[in-house]
Image (cartoon, rainbow, N blue to C red; front, side, top):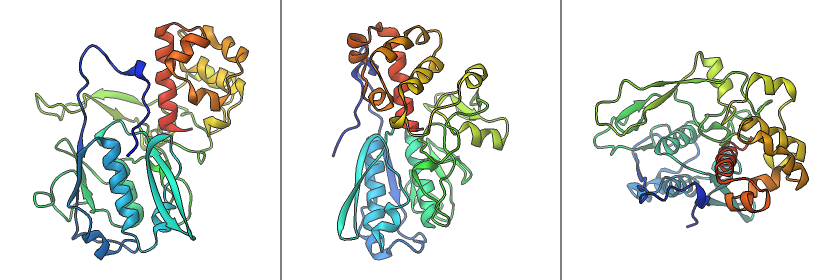
Length: 312
């Protein structure tokens, strides 16, 4: 099984990193919907993991594909990601491969699977709690002991609407593709401290709090929020960063961090860094060939990683 590529310069070296694991349980008594074969689902293990989130997501998605009456029905709900684990399906006489998005949290796995199950009409198929202890009739997923209702947003641009084949909106922590009209939100959405977590909980200390549902959906379209001034100066580049021109990349770099990265935009023109080249950059390359110091290089790597996760 492949590993998610990770820029070594972004990994803290001061201490041994704590390994994040997740375990996803399968409800074999759930409604399988029109796409999944119950007999095949019964042959799946009772749970996937515990393992790295990227591995567990791959196993769960691959399990859905392998359990489908027609693998194409599940495979076609997904779109190509950057740098994640690979899944496969066999249809039309040949094998098809696809990379899942980069996974960096347990919540991402839960939201992704929830959206996939909703599209397959089998919403109670997965949970991070054993189904002997969870309510099988509930459509909620749980994350570190706290329920996320069925209204929780999903990494939806990795999934295609099974009815009208239109792309969904995007979760800000997840990936976006070329379906939305603009990759940047007109308004950033804020954060607030989470009060509902008990003392000592290792749950996330910050929660997304959109000012309104419409603002949340608009805010979902970007992994970062450019300033209004920069939006007015130049229209956003196209959805797919691999198709960006050199000028699109210059705009992206300057807009991502005007103070730290803005002074370096000319070097991107000089070296003709287009969108495809941008996605291939690593911190050592940035420092060696583009002349950036470690701080700006790490900041740029951060924005490139967010771009890969969001795949505008």
